[in-house]
Image 1 (tube, rainbow, N blue to C red):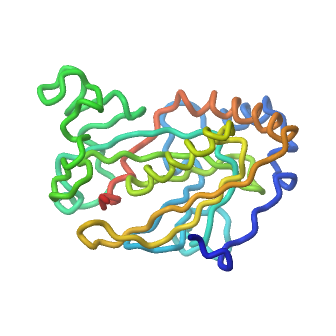
Image 2: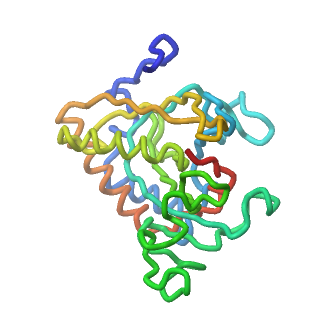
Length: 261
């Protein structure tokens, strides 16, 4: 159960700056600022889960005075409106321990967690269909370290608008929290609530896998908005989705989050 004493209050939806903008204007702003082609993690402000069981989020800030020399700050929680998300997969033939650096491109990847391209793409010897569901590296207990997880990492990238923001942030959900995120979204769906029709809050807690290795796990909770506000957000969400769903998202920076449950 979450420690309510250590959580920050949710910012009322009425105070969100995005509500003062029209969907058409926001679509134009995003298109102008991102341009075309590949969406790099560096195009938008990033928020990431730390390693080794840390309970503070790591984020890249463009203008925070408390940021370190690399522009990094730590925050206790993340809250905002999720306007788009995408599930993806990435697999490297050599493990992170074997290959120095995290910037090497995957040997196989998927932009939709359904169709793979690369080593196990369509027509490959190891996975002729190219479907991630058939790939030997996506099967449970395929973890090269002998764990019960998948050797191919499934991650989720969420685009989230904070109370003071007009452009979304890029939030990387690591393999160890994808299941929790899916359960959260399905829980909203069971109540007839779209994921973009709530204020989502994410905090971190420390957990351990079967091998006793600590990792950070995300806890999700939400607050609904009025039907009037929901209609306003719906137009903005649709405009932003039109921009993001056709872009290629770089999955190279998911390397280094190789702890499995």
